[in-house]
Length: 169
Image (cartoon, rainbow, N blue to C red; front, side):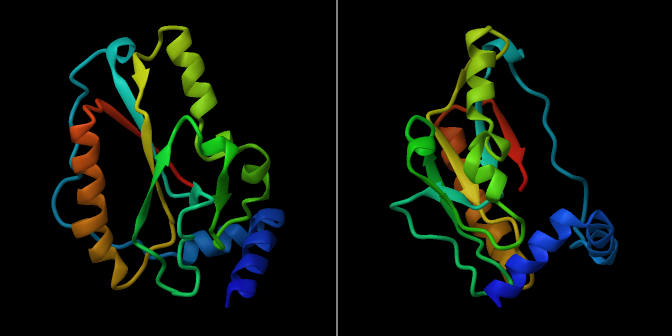
């Protein structure tokens, strides 16, 4: 199954018409009520920002995301912003990560955000960021919403993060 997923991801990358068919066939998971939204409590130049990505990036010494489960892996990995780019790995079969392996800023723009901090456009970056695998379906959606996302939200709150930038794969 992993080989098939990788071949599909490469084909979709190279043939945009194929990608369009996949996107049009996708049926999103329905939610009830309004999407939660809150305005930032601080101006950008005073805010602390953390990144959350669904690109499957993690440190080499961490357990890879489970690619054998067709419904995905709802767990997350804690990412050290200072060391991640010197020891990262990407475990994700549902997109072609070859460019992200060459430049991880494609999926986790730490270097670009550091430039914003240096230019005083952004107040600061959190030391810790979070990585998920973006292909979550079926029974794992509830785990993601009720467990993993809540755990990460609490960790971000404890770290006094003001803003979170979600970067998809």
